[in-house]
Image (tube, rainbow, N blue to C red; front, top):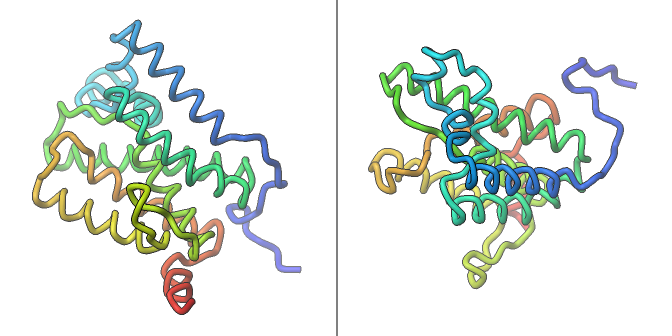
Length: 214
């Protein structure tokens, strides 16, 4: 039997609705912030405060706070529709590691880009980076799944991922929808891609290419 390196050793499979737990935590934090708005600043990733005040926890906590009900709703719907299925496939332990690590690394890489470009006073919030990672994971494990875009247009999961990535690149360079963290979305995709390649030993590009034949 092949002996895997420690970073590829699988967890014992368990399923305990981690996606629903994450949704519950996000909703609870949103409700808490609504009655104590000052908490938002302490959880958002603000480069200036990370550097000056040593708020090193915010590259993790930023993904649990949102800018409003619609922001929360769209992210949680994505986590519900794609995260539940992915968790059932890879197990709750693996799913939690994948989600939390992808969101945290997307935040850390965003912070690095902000510092390198001199953008210190921006506030990064929302689970979108982690949710985009989950979307890539779902499309990789369910490449033939069909999703109804806007509830009407049928589209394959890999096509949806590629379309979203292209749209995020376009929006980032044209600076449309300026309040949206397009870079963090793309970094969520990138971190998830590396995770799938290195830890789970599955190449999304190969999966997408092979699935196009069916």
